[in-house]
Length: 183
Image (tube, rainbow, N blue to C red):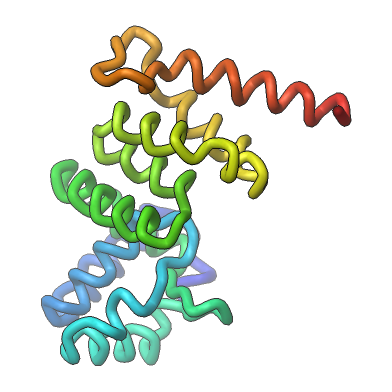
């Protein structure tokens, strides 16, 4: 049913009713998963406290969360939008900072930079990505990185050396034009 109701306004009342029936741990997992744009590593919860593993299993049984074949879990896309929109901004930032840590630990620097940028840590996002730019570009992450860095204001002066978003954007744009030309 949730997959057939992709409208935010249609899902909001359903989410509010459902949320009351979930345990605190189940709600925490759904809140955490709502910040991930792609499947989050399931081991974050499965290897954690037993209560978290059981809560994740319950969410999977209820089909509020899907598991992929690479060991990842994700909220249903329409539900993700509703859950995320209902979170206070401060909680969104905290969860994005936590997601950045998870992605960084796994060497996923472009998604980590995205989460840092969403957490209000633009300088840290640029610095992290820039330090790993060559590997990320070779992994095909240039377009995703550029999309994230396009959301950072150029009016913001860099707080740390090596965090000038202009430099990163220029390098990524140049890389993108070389890719388009086939060079």
